Image (cartoon, rainbow, N blue to C red; front, top):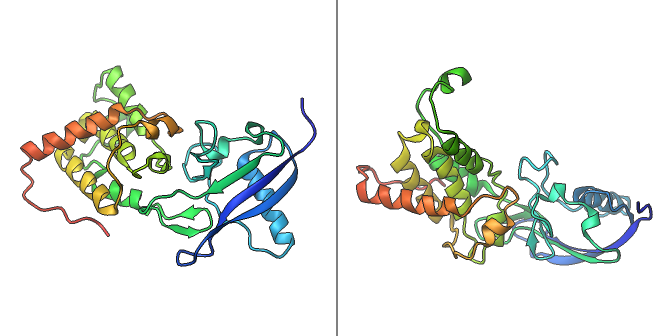
Length: 261
């Protein structure tokens, strides 16, 4: 077991606010345990900055258990870093001693930088608000469980529902497409009987909101699925395309959707 601390050169994006011009700043770090998480490393760096009277680096985090998707960092050119996991589950043993580590925020027009590494991802919230819900009454959990669903369908819906909305798919895509995120949210409800009431409306509205937010078109390169920490499948994008095409062909929704702002 390795007990000696490691040294790193941290090059991180610093931006005072949304209006300011940002730049990469360099910070040396020593005596970092390889068993330390990436966010713990940033905590130590911030403690050192505070001791010097400098402004700490702003970054998003919450659960630190790989569940919430808040820890959205672009590390050495990859969303969430060198492993297919969330940043909070990444450890410093994934980096070599004396390595230079570049840390940037998500780079996408719909995710504007708020400060340093923190970006505004409320575009995802508005997409969900546009159609990622059901209005049918299912009662309590036991009542909902009375609706029989084949296990294969239930498993597929659960796989889609595992999306944590971190935005790694957008950050990894050269067009900043949100298709993997939107397709997961559409799929989890399209597969279940509880989601059939708004099925057509959901596909039309969520895609319209996605476009209104400024996300790019799907590149079909699969970079989104490759970097997704929850392994959301590209199959969901194919399903979203089918759902949207079917809705546009057969929709009786005469009311024009007005994107949420």
